[in-house]
Every structure is written in structure tokens, then in C-alpha cells.
Image (cartoon, helix red, strand yellow):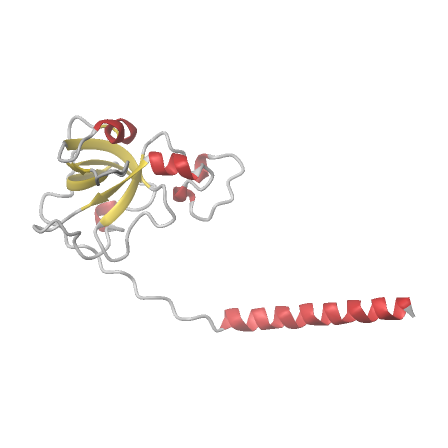
Length: 183
């Protein structure tokens, strides 16, 4: 009798697993349509430059020393987050060169190597900054920076601008006036 009950329980479990798999297949086949691509940001003339601004420092050094309102020039790469480029604003996350991307890490299994998910959160936070291009009122411009003049995750960039440091925070925001993408 015990064998019969064990067999019956196992049969029910296998049956549920098969039904579950069928339901899973059905739900993925009727996936929602993809969202339309984000519109590219319309940048002011002179923001994207062909020569790197002079005097660039590693992001780590600038982040440790820059005060609110300082003029800064940083050398970094686009990444350090799952989505380093905002979809609807001229904002991107940049990372210090010392923060490895996952494609440079042994045993890489990341589908987004630019997120540096192989590194501790505290390190990613300490070694990243936000870059934004703002209007006359200090608000980020509408549209994405992704694919504008070659900007994309993992791109190496040099950014010149003004440091913004929210009170009581280690966050660094750079209001960019010039961006150079290293070919």
C-alpha cells in the first residue's frame, strides 16, 4: 500500500510539472510587444567633441576630491549599472577604470557585462558617477544618450563639466559640457 501511495504522489507531481511547463511555454509565446525605441537626445552644439578635453583624471580621484561647483574632467567608461543609459533623459552612469566590467572577470556569465555585477555593491557605488546634460534650468535634456555619437555601454569617455555634490551624500553628478568617446 505504501508503494502505491508513493507512486500516486510521484505521478501527480510529474503531471503538475508537465502542466506547469506547458503553461510556461504558452505564456512566453504570447509575450507583450517590445516598447518603441527611445528618442535620441538633441544635444547642444559642441557637447560631443572629437578631441578629448585636456587634464582628465581618473573618476576615482575626482570623486574623492571634487567639491560642488568645481570644474572637472574625468576619464571613465560607461557602465557600473544594469542600464547605464537612461531611456528618456540625457543621463548616463560612468565607472572608474579600476572597476572591472564582467567581461574582464573570470567565470563571466553576465548578459550585461557593463553592470559590474561581479563586484560588491559598495565598490560599484564608490566607483561610479552620474553624467547628465542639462538645459538652462538645470534639468536633464529629454531623450536618451544611447547611440548618440557612439555612446553605448562599455564605451570609454572623457567628460568635462561641473561637479554637483548633493548635501550629505558621496554621490557625484557631472553636468557635462563636453564628452569625447574614445574610438
